[in-house]
Length: 492
Image (cartoon, rainbow, N blue to C red; front, side, top):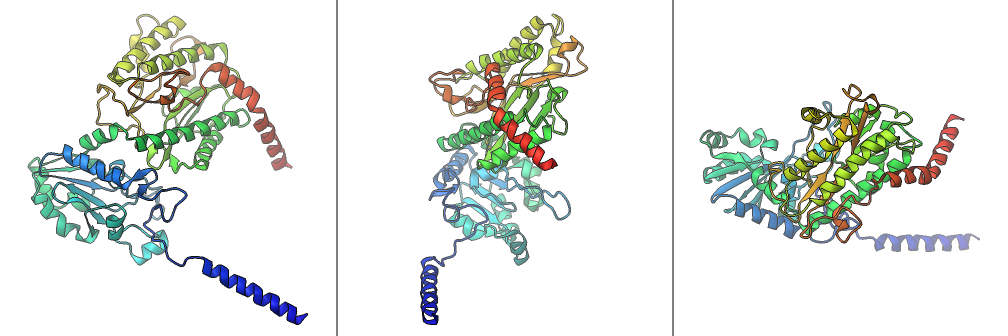
Protein backbone atom coordinates (compact mmCIF):
# COMPACT_ATOMS: atom_id res chain seq x y z
CA UNK A 1 0.00 0.00 0.00
CA UNK A 2 2.82 2.39 0.86
CA UNK A 3 4.55 1.60 -2.42
CA UNK A 4 1.39 2.37 -4.39
CA UNK A 5 0.90 5.64 -2.51
CA UNK A 6 4.52 6.61 -3.18
CA UNK A 7 4.12 5.94 -6.92
CA UNK A 8 0.91 7.97 -7.09
CA UNK A 9 2.58 10.89 -5.31
CA UNK A 10 5.55 10.72 -7.68
CA UNK A 11 3.23 10.71 -10.73
CA UNK A 12 1.25 13.64 -9.33
CA UNK A 13 4.43 15.57 -8.60
CA UNK A 14 5.68 14.87 -12.13
CA UNK A 15 2.41 16.10 -13.70
CA UNK A 16 2.48 19.28 -11.58
CA UNK A 17 6.03 19.94 -12.74
CA UNK A 18 4.95 19.52 -16.36
CA UNK A 19 2.03 21.89 -15.83
CA UNK A 20 4.31 24.48 -14.25
CA UNK A 21 6.67 24.40 -17.21
CA UNK A 22 3.73 24.71 -19.64
CA UNK A 23 3.18 28.33 -18.53
CA UNK A 24 5.34 31.13 -19.90
CA UNK A 25 7.27 33.09 -17.29
CA UNK A 26 7.72 36.05 -19.60
CA UNK A 27 6.27 39.16 -17.92
CA UNK A 28 3.77 41.25 -19.89
CA UNK A 29 4.64 44.97 -19.72
CA UNK A 30 2.09 47.03 -17.77
CA UNK A 31 1.51 50.40 -19.42
CA UNK A 32 -1.26 51.44 -17.05
CA UNK A 33 -3.99 50.75 -19.62
CA UNK A 34 -5.12 47.80 -21.79
CA UNK A 35 -2.77 46.59 -24.53
CA UNK A 36 -3.07 43.74 -27.06
CA UNK A 37 -0.66 41.72 -24.87
CA UNK A 38 -2.46 42.29 -21.56
CA UNK A 39 -6.02 42.28 -22.93
CA UNK A 40 -6.09 40.04 -26.05
CA UNK A 41 -9.85 39.56 -25.56
CA UNK A 42 -10.32 43.31 -25.98
CA UNK A 43 -7.70 44.50 -28.45
CA UNK A 44 -6.02 43.42 -31.67
CA UNK A 45 -2.34 43.76 -32.51
CA UNK A 46 -1.57 47.27 -33.73
CA UNK A 47 -4.30 48.95 -31.69
CA UNK A 48 -3.44 51.62 -29.11
CA UNK A 49 -6.97 51.74 -27.72
CA UNK A 50 -9.69 49.15 -28.44
CA UNK A 51 -10.78 49.58 -32.05
CA UNK A 52 -8.32 52.38 -32.92
CA UNK A 53 -4.95 51.55 -34.51
CA UNK A 54 -1.65 53.34 -34.14
CA UNK A 55 -1.89 54.29 -37.84
CA UNK A 56 -5.13 56.16 -37.15
CA UNK A 57 -3.59 58.08 -34.25
CA UNK A 58 -0.59 59.01 -36.42
CA UNK A 59 -2.98 60.13 -39.18
CA UNK A 60 -4.90 62.34 -36.73
CA UNK A 61 -1.72 64.13 -35.68
CA UNK A 62 -0.66 64.57 -39.29
CA UNK A 63 -4.03 66.10 -40.19
CA UNK A 64 -3.83 68.46 -37.21
CA UNK A 65 -0.39 69.65 -38.26
CA UNK A 66 -1.76 70.33 -41.75
CA UNK A 67 -4.44 72.57 -40.23
CA UNK A 68 -2.07 74.52 -37.97
CA UNK A 69 -0.26 77.64 -39.27
CA UNK A 70 3.40 77.21 -40.21
CA UNK A 71 5.88 77.07 -37.30
CA UNK A 72 3.08 76.47 -34.79
CA UNK A 73 3.39 74.57 -31.53
CA UNK A 74 0.44 72.71 -29.97
CA UNK A 75 0.45 71.85 -26.27
CA UNK A 76 -2.15 69.36 -25.04
CA UNK A 77 -2.28 68.45 -21.36
CA UNK A 78 -3.91 65.32 -19.98
CA UNK A 79 -6.94 65.80 -17.75
CA UNK A 80 -6.09 66.27 -14.07
CA UNK A 81 -7.14 63.96 -11.26
CA UNK A 82 -10.05 65.50 -9.36
CA UNK A 83 -10.42 64.70 -5.69
CA UNK A 84 -13.63 63.76 -3.89
CA UNK A 85 -11.95 64.02 -0.48
CA UNK A 86 -8.35 64.50 0.63
CA UNK A 87 -7.43 60.90 -0.29
CA UNK A 88 -10.32 59.71 -2.50
CA UNK A 89 -10.24 60.68 -6.19
CA UNK A 90 -13.21 60.85 -8.53
CA UNK A 91 -13.14 58.27 -11.31
CA UNK A 92 -10.64 59.57 -13.85
CA UNK A 93 -11.76 60.45 -17.36
CA UNK A 94 -9.20 61.51 -19.93
CA UNK A 95 -9.53 64.80 -21.82
CA UNK A 96 -11.03 63.99 -25.23
CA UNK A 97 -8.45 65.97 -27.25
CA UNK A 98 -5.49 64.41 -25.44
CA UNK A 99 -6.97 60.93 -25.91
CA UNK A 100 -7.85 61.64 -29.55
CA UNK A 101 -4.27 62.60 -30.41
CA UNK A 102 -2.22 60.24 -28.22
CA UNK A 103 -4.34 57.28 -27.10
CA UNK A 104 -2.90 57.69 -23.60
CA UNK A 105 -5.55 57.14 -20.91
CA UNK A 106 -3.67 58.24 -17.81
CA UNK A 107 -3.34 61.64 -16.07
CA UNK A 108 -0.22 63.67 -15.54
CA UNK A 109 1.21 63.99 -19.04
CA UNK A 110 1.75 66.82 -21.52
CA UNK A 111 1.91 66.25 -25.28
CA UNK A 112 3.58 68.72 -27.65
CA UNK A 113 3.06 68.64 -31.39
CA UNK A 114 4.88 70.56 -34.13
CA UNK A 115 6.01 70.19 -37.73
CA UNK A 116 9.60 70.31 -36.47
CA UNK A 117 9.56 67.47 -33.93
CA UNK A 118 6.29 65.61 -34.53
CA UNK A 119 4.80 64.26 -31.31
CA UNK A 120 6.84 64.85 -28.17
CA UNK A 121 5.39 63.43 -24.95
CA UNK A 122 6.34 64.39 -21.43
CA UNK A 123 5.38 61.49 -19.20
CA UNK A 124 4.76 61.29 -15.45
CA UNK A 125 7.39 59.48 -13.41
CA UNK A 126 5.94 56.79 -11.16
CA UNK A 127 7.41 56.67 -7.68
CA UNK A 128 7.65 53.44 -5.70
CA UNK A 129 4.95 54.68 -3.32
CA UNK A 130 2.58 55.45 -6.24
CA UNK A 131 3.11 52.02 -7.80
CA UNK A 132 2.27 50.29 -4.51
CA UNK A 133 -0.95 52.26 -4.08
CA UNK A 134 -2.10 52.88 -7.66
CA UNK A 135 -0.24 50.45 -9.91
CA UNK A 136 2.00 50.96 -12.91
CA UNK A 137 1.70 53.92 -15.27
CA UNK A 138 2.97 54.55 -18.78
CA UNK A 139 6.36 56.23 -18.91
CA UNK A 140 8.87 57.31 -21.53
CA UNK A 141 9.26 53.81 -22.96
CA UNK A 142 5.51 53.48 -23.42
CA UNK A 143 5.34 56.87 -25.14
CA UNK A 144 7.84 55.70 -27.75
CA UNK A 145 6.82 52.07 -28.06
CA UNK A 146 3.04 52.17 -27.56
CA UNK A 147 1.90 55.70 -28.39
CA UNK A 148 4.41 56.09 -31.26
CA UNK A 149 5.80 59.45 -30.15
CA UNK A 150 8.85 60.72 -32.04
CA UNK A 151 10.37 61.97 -28.78
CA UNK A 152 9.60 61.37 -25.11
CA UNK A 153 10.93 62.72 -21.83
CA UNK A 154 10.05 62.45 -18.15
CA UNK A 155 7.99 65.38 -16.79
CA UNK A 156 11.02 66.55 -14.82
CA UNK A 157 12.55 67.65 -18.16
CA UNK A 158 9.58 69.85 -19.16
CA UNK A 159 11.03 73.11 -17.78
CA UNK A 160 14.30 72.39 -19.50
CA UNK A 161 12.99 71.50 -22.97
CA UNK A 162 9.59 73.18 -23.56
CA UNK A 163 10.72 76.85 -23.21
CA UNK A 164 13.09 76.50 -26.18
CA UNK A 165 10.33 74.88 -28.24
CA UNK A 166 8.02 77.80 -27.41
CA UNK A 167 10.70 80.36 -28.35
CA UNK A 168 11.18 78.73 -31.76
CA UNK A 169 7.46 78.81 -32.57
CA UNK A 170 5.60 81.66 -34.27
CA UNK A 171 2.19 80.69 -32.91
CA UNK A 172 1.21 78.71 -29.82
CA UNK A 173 -1.97 76.67 -29.37
CA UNK A 174 -3.12 74.80 -26.28
CA UNK A 175 -6.16 73.10 -24.81
CA UNK A 176 -7.52 75.83 -22.56
CA UNK A 177 -9.91 73.54 -20.66
CA UNK A 178 -7.10 71.35 -19.33
CA UNK A 179 -4.36 73.97 -19.20
CA UNK A 180 -2.06 73.28 -16.29
CA UNK A 181 0.29 75.64 -14.39
CA UNK A 182 3.01 73.11 -15.20
CA UNK A 183 3.48 74.97 -18.49
CA UNK A 184 1.23 78.07 -18.28
CA UNK A 185 3.35 79.47 -15.43
CA UNK A 186 6.50 79.30 -17.57
CA UNK A 187 7.94 82.71 -18.34
CA UNK A 188 8.16 81.92 -22.06
CA UNK A 189 4.50 80.91 -22.18
CA UNK A 190 3.48 84.04 -20.27
CA UNK A 191 5.40 86.23 -22.72
CA UNK A 192 3.83 84.50 -25.72
CA UNK A 193 0.35 84.99 -24.22
CA UNK A 194 1.11 88.68 -23.50
CA UNK A 195 1.92 89.42 -27.15
CA UNK A 196 -1.10 87.49 -28.48
CA UNK A 197 0.73 84.39 -29.72
CA UNK A 198 -1.45 81.94 -27.72
CA UNK A 199 -4.81 80.60 -28.97
CA UNK A 200 -7.24 77.78 -28.19
CA UNK A 201 -6.36 74.54 -29.97
CA UNK A 202 -9.93 73.20 -29.86
CA UNK A 203 -10.98 75.14 -32.97
CA UNK A 204 -8.77 72.65 -34.86
CA UNK A 205 -9.24 69.47 -32.82
CA UNK A 206 -13.03 69.82 -32.85
CA UNK A 207 -12.88 70.21 -36.62
CA UNK A 208 -11.05 66.88 -36.86
CA UNK A 209 -13.33 65.14 -34.36
CA UNK A 210 -16.53 66.39 -36.04
CA UNK A 211 -16.46 63.84 -38.89
CA UNK A 212 -15.95 60.31 -37.58
CA UNK A 213 -13.73 57.65 -39.15
CA UNK A 214 -15.07 54.13 -39.88
CA UNK A 215 -13.33 52.86 -36.73
CA UNK A 216 -14.90 55.59 -34.62
CA UNK A 217 -18.34 54.93 -36.08
CA UNK A 218 -18.02 51.25 -35.24
CA UNK A 219 -17.39 52.13 -31.59
CA UNK A 220 -20.25 54.63 -31.60
CA UNK A 221 -22.65 52.03 -32.99
CA UNK A 222 -21.55 49.58 -30.31
CA UNK A 223 -21.95 52.24 -27.61
CA UNK A 224 -25.46 53.05 -28.88
CA UNK A 225 -26.36 49.35 -29.01
CA UNK A 226 -25.27 48.86 -25.40
CA UNK A 227 -27.30 51.86 -24.23
CA UNK A 228 -30.38 50.65 -26.13
CA UNK A 229 -30.18 47.16 -24.66
CA UNK A 230 -29.63 48.56 -21.17
CA UNK A 231 -32.54 51.01 -21.43
CA UNK A 232 -34.83 48.30 -22.78
CA UNK A 233 -34.04 46.05 -19.80
CA UNK A 234 -34.63 49.03 -17.50
CA UNK A 235 -37.98 49.77 -19.13
CA UNK A 236 -39.10 46.17 -18.50
CA UNK A 237 -37.79 46.48 -14.94
CA UNK A 238 -39.79 49.66 -14.24
CA UNK A 239 -43.17 48.03 -13.77
CA UNK A 240 -41.93 46.06 -10.77
CA UNK A 241 -39.49 48.68 -9.45
CA UNK A 242 -41.00 52.15 -10.10
CA UNK A 243 -38.28 54.03 -8.24
CA UNK A 244 -35.98 56.57 -9.86
CA UNK A 245 -32.91 55.36 -7.92
CA UNK A 246 -33.51 51.71 -8.84
CA UNK A 247 -33.94 52.51 -12.52
CA UNK A 248 -30.77 54.61 -12.48
CA UNK A 249 -28.85 51.74 -10.88
CA UNK A 250 -30.38 49.21 -13.27
CA UNK A 251 -29.41 51.06 -16.45
CA UNK A 252 -25.84 51.58 -15.23
CA UNK A 253 -25.55 47.92 -14.28
CA UNK A 254 -26.83 46.80 -17.69
CA UNK A 255 -24.40 49.14 -19.50
CA UNK A 256 -21.40 47.97 -17.48
CA UNK A 257 -22.45 44.35 -17.88
CA UNK A 258 -22.22 44.80 -21.66
CA UNK A 259 -18.73 46.30 -21.62
CA UNK A 260 -19.19 50.04 -21.15
CA UNK A 261 -16.48 51.62 -18.98
CA UNK A 262 -18.78 54.24 -17.47
CA UNK A 263 -21.96 56.21 -18.01
CA UNK A 264 -21.56 59.15 -20.38
CA UNK A 265 -23.37 61.30 -17.79
CA UNK A 266 -25.42 60.84 -14.65
CA UNK A 267 -28.69 59.23 -15.80
CA UNK A 268 -31.72 61.50 -15.85
CA UNK A 269 -34.61 59.53 -14.32
CA UNK A 270 -37.52 61.92 -13.93
CA UNK A 271 -40.79 60.43 -12.72
CA UNK A 272 -43.99 62.47 -13.00
CA UNK A 273 -43.32 66.22 -12.53
CA UNK A 274 -39.57 65.53 -12.27
CA UNK A 275 -39.63 64.72 -15.98
CA UNK A 276 -40.25 68.40 -16.68
CA UNK A 277 -36.83 69.27 -15.17
CA UNK A 278 -34.56 69.00 -18.20
CA UNK A 279 -31.37 67.82 -16.45
CA UNK A 280 -32.99 66.36 -13.35
CA UNK A 281 -30.41 64.25 -11.51
CA UNK A 282 -31.60 63.65 -7.93
CA UNK A 283 -33.21 60.33 -8.87
CA UNK A 284 -34.63 59.82 -5.38
CA UNK A 285 -38.41 59.69 -5.82
CA UNK A 286 -40.97 56.91 -6.26
CA UNK A 287 -42.85 57.04 -9.58
CA UNK A 288 -46.55 57.05 -8.81
CA UNK A 289 -49.04 54.81 -10.58
CA UNK A 290 -50.15 56.49 -13.79
CA UNK A 291 -47.14 58.83 -14.03
CA UNK A 292 -44.61 58.85 -16.86
CA UNK A 293 -40.88 58.42 -16.37
CA UNK A 294 -38.40 60.23 -18.61
CA UNK A 295 -35.00 58.54 -18.85
CA UNK A 296 -32.09 60.25 -20.59
CA UNK A 297 -29.09 57.90 -20.57
CA UNK A 298 -25.86 57.16 -22.35
CA UNK A 299 -22.70 55.16 -21.82
CA UNK A 300 -19.08 55.47 -22.83
CA UNK A 301 -17.33 52.69 -24.73
CA UNK A 302 -13.57 53.06 -25.22
CA UNK A 303 -13.86 56.84 -25.37
CA UNK A 304 -17.07 57.15 -27.42
CA UNK A 305 -20.44 58.23 -26.02
CA UNK A 306 -24.04 57.33 -26.65
CA UNK A 307 -27.07 59.45 -25.73
CA UNK A 308 -30.77 58.57 -25.97
CA UNK A 309 -34.04 59.33 -24.20
CA UNK A 310 -37.31 57.48 -23.87
CA UNK A 311 -40.46 58.35 -21.91
CA UNK A 312 -43.01 55.76 -20.83
CA UNK A 313 -45.60 54.85 -18.17
CA UNK A 314 -44.19 52.14 -15.85
CA UNK A 315 -47.79 51.11 -15.07
CA UNK A 316 -48.10 49.86 -18.65
CA UNK A 317 -50.58 52.29 -20.22
CA UNK A 318 -50.50 55.89 -21.43
CA UNK A 319 -53.45 58.01 -20.37
CA UNK A 320 -55.32 59.81 -23.16
CA UNK A 321 -53.71 63.12 -22.13
CA UNK A 322 -50.20 61.62 -22.01
CA UNK A 323 -50.77 59.93 -25.35
CA UNK A 324 -51.88 63.21 -26.92
CA UNK A 325 -48.68 65.04 -25.92
CA UNK A 326 -46.44 62.01 -26.56
CA UNK A 327 -47.73 61.62 -30.10
CA UNK A 328 -46.83 65.26 -30.85
CA UNK A 329 -43.26 64.68 -29.66
CA UNK A 330 -43.00 61.38 -31.55
CA UNK A 331 -44.18 62.87 -34.85
CA UNK A 332 -41.77 65.79 -34.41
CA UNK A 333 -38.94 63.32 -33.76
CA UNK A 334 -39.74 61.44 -36.98
CA UNK A 335 -40.19 64.55 -39.11
CA UNK A 336 -36.92 66.07 -37.92
CA UNK A 337 -34.99 62.87 -38.58
CA UNK A 338 -36.15 62.97 -42.19
CA UNK A 339 -34.27 66.27 -42.53
CA UNK A 340 -30.99 64.73 -41.35
CA UNK A 341 -28.92 64.70 -44.52
CA UNK A 342 -25.81 66.36 -45.97
CA UNK A 343 -26.29 70.11 -46.45
CA UNK A 344 -28.87 70.54 -43.69
CA UNK A 345 -27.82 72.05 -40.36
CA UNK A 346 -28.85 71.50 -36.75
CA UNK A 347 -30.12 75.10 -36.73
CA UNK A 348 -32.42 74.47 -39.69
CA UNK A 349 -33.74 71.26 -38.14
CA UNK A 350 -34.24 73.05 -34.83
CA UNK A 351 -36.23 75.87 -36.42
CA UNK A 352 -38.45 73.32 -38.14
CA UNK A 353 -39.01 71.52 -34.83
CA UNK A 354 -40.09 74.78 -33.19
CA UNK A 355 -42.69 75.31 -35.92
CA UNK A 356 -44.06 71.78 -35.51
CA UNK A 357 -44.20 71.87 -31.72
CA UNK A 358 -45.63 75.38 -31.49
CA UNK A 359 -48.37 74.49 -33.96
CA UNK A 360 -49.11 71.22 -32.14
CA UNK A 361 -49.23 72.81 -28.70
CA UNK A 362 -51.71 75.40 -29.98
CA UNK A 363 -53.92 72.69 -31.50
CA UNK A 364 -53.88 70.73 -28.23
CA UNK A 365 -54.75 73.86 -26.28
CA UNK A 366 -51.63 74.14 -24.13
CA UNK A 367 -50.61 77.39 -25.85
CA UNK A 368 -52.71 80.22 -27.17
CA UNK A 369 -52.08 82.05 -30.45
CA UNK A 370 -50.16 84.93 -28.85
CA UNK A 371 -47.95 82.79 -26.59
CA UNK A 372 -44.92 82.14 -28.83
CA UNK A 373 -42.68 83.50 -26.07
CA UNK A 374 -44.24 81.00 -23.65
CA UNK A 375 -43.21 78.15 -25.96
CA UNK A 376 -39.53 78.70 -25.13
CA UNK A 377 -40.32 78.34 -21.43
CA UNK A 378 -41.81 74.92 -22.17
CA UNK A 379 -38.90 73.90 -24.40
CA UNK A 380 -35.71 75.99 -24.03
CA UNK A 381 -33.47 73.32 -25.57
CA UNK A 382 -32.03 72.77 -29.04
CA UNK A 383 -33.38 69.96 -31.19
CA UNK A 384 -30.00 68.26 -30.92
CA UNK A 385 -26.23 68.41 -30.68
CA UNK A 386 -23.11 66.74 -32.07
CA UNK A 387 -22.11 63.47 -30.45
CA UNK A 388 -18.77 61.67 -30.21
CA UNK A 389 -16.00 61.48 -27.64
CA UNK A 390 -17.92 64.01 -25.56
CA UNK A 391 -21.70 64.02 -25.12
CA UNK A 392 -21.90 67.56 -26.53
CA UNK A 393 -19.07 66.89 -28.95
CA UNK A 394 -17.10 69.38 -31.06
CA UNK A 395 -18.68 72.35 -29.28
CA UNK A 396 -16.58 74.79 -31.33
CA UNK A 397 -18.47 73.75 -34.48
CA UNK A 398 -21.47 76.01 -35.14
CA UNK A 399 -24.99 74.55 -35.35
CA UNK A 400 -25.24 76.51 -38.60
CA UNK A 401 -22.57 74.32 -40.25
CA UNK A 402 -23.98 72.15 -43.07
CA UNK A 403 -23.87 68.51 -42.01
CA UNK A 404 -21.47 66.07 -43.68
CA UNK A 405 -21.42 62.28 -44.02
CA UNK A 406 -19.76 60.83 -40.93
CA UNK A 407 -21.20 63.38 -38.51
CA UNK A 408 -23.34 62.01 -35.67
CA UNK A 409 -26.04 64.17 -34.11
CA UNK A 410 -28.94 63.74 -31.72
CA UNK A 411 -32.57 64.54 -32.49
CA UNK A 412 -34.40 65.13 -29.21
CA UNK A 413 -37.67 67.06 -29.30
CA UNK A 414 -39.29 67.50 -25.92
CA UNK A 415 -41.86 69.41 -23.98
CA UNK A 416 -41.61 70.20 -20.27
CA UNK A 417 -44.88 71.15 -18.57
CA UNK A 418 -44.30 71.98 -14.89
CA UNK A 419 -46.88 71.52 -12.15
CA UNK A 420 -47.17 75.32 -12.10
CA UNK A 421 -48.10 75.43 -15.81
CA UNK A 422 -50.34 78.38 -16.69
CA UNK A 423 -52.65 76.26 -18.79
CA UNK A 424 -55.10 73.34 -18.64
CA UNK A 425 -54.62 71.44 -15.37
CA UNK A 426 -54.69 68.03 -17.07
CA UNK A 427 -51.33 68.78 -18.73
CA UNK A 428 -49.55 69.93 -15.58
CA UNK A 429 -46.51 67.93 -14.42
CA UNK A 430 -45.81 66.17 -17.72
CA UNK A 431 -42.31 65.95 -19.21
CA UNK A 432 -41.72 64.06 -22.47
CA UNK A 433 -38.58 63.74 -24.57
CA UNK A 434 -37.72 61.27 -27.33
CA UNK A 435 -34.05 61.31 -28.30
CA UNK A 436 -32.27 59.34 -31.00
CA UNK A 437 -28.74 59.27 -32.41
CA UNK A 438 -28.48 59.83 -36.16
CA UNK A 439 -25.48 59.18 -38.41
CA UNK A 440 -25.40 61.42 -41.47
CA UNK A 441 -24.69 59.44 -44.64
CA UNK A 442 -24.35 60.22 -48.33
CA UNK A 443 -27.92 59.11 -48.89
CA UNK A 444 -29.41 60.86 -45.88
CA UNK A 445 -31.30 59.24 -43.05
CA UNK A 446 -34.58 57.36 -43.08
CA UNK A 447 -36.53 57.34 -39.83
CA UNK A 448 -38.57 54.24 -40.69
CA UNK A 449 -37.89 50.60 -41.54
CA UNK A 450 -36.26 51.47 -44.84
CA UNK A 451 -33.04 50.88 -46.72
CA UNK A 452 -31.05 53.33 -44.61
CA UNK A 453 -32.61 52.60 -41.23
CA UNK A 454 -29.25 51.53 -39.84
CA UNK A 455 -28.14 55.17 -39.80
CA UNK A 456 -30.45 55.72 -36.80
CA UNK A 457 -28.00 54.30 -34.26
CA UNK A 458 -30.67 54.01 -31.56
CA UNK A 459 -33.31 52.61 -33.92
CA UNK A 460 -33.57 49.34 -31.99
CA UNK A 461 -35.06 51.11 -28.95
CA UNK A 462 -38.90 51.13 -29.15
CA UNK A 463 -40.70 54.47 -29.13
CA UNK A 464 -44.14 53.76 -30.65
CA UNK A 465 -46.91 53.83 -28.04
CA UNK A 466 -48.28 50.40 -28.99
CA UNK A 467 -44.80 48.85 -28.91
CA UNK A 468 -44.02 50.30 -25.49
CA UNK A 469 -47.33 49.23 -23.99
CA UNK A 470 -46.99 45.74 -25.47
CA UNK A 471 -43.51 45.34 -24.01
CA UNK A 472 -44.53 46.55 -20.58
CA UNK A 473 -47.65 44.40 -20.39
CA UNK A 474 -46.47 41.21 -22.12
CA UNK A 475 -42.74 40.95 -21.46
CA UNK A 476 -42.49 42.46 -18.00
CA UNK A 477 -44.53 39.64 -16.44
CA UNK A 478 -41.58 37.32 -15.88
CA UNK A 479 -39.50 40.10 -14.37
CA UNK A 480 -42.45 41.17 -12.22
CA UNK A 481 -42.97 37.64 -10.82
CA UNK A 482 -39.24 37.27 -10.17
CA UNK A 483 -39.23 40.64 -8.39
CA UNK A 484 -42.18 39.70 -6.15
CA UNK A 485 -40.49 36.41 -5.26
CA UNK A 486 -37.26 38.21 -4.37
CA UNK A 487 -39.14 40.67 -2.18
CA UNK A 488 -40.99 37.83 -0.40
CA UNK A 489 -37.72 35.96 0.17
CA UNK A 490 -36.05 39.08 1.56
CA UNK A 491 -38.88 39.75 4.02
CA UNK A 492 -39.18 36.22 5.46
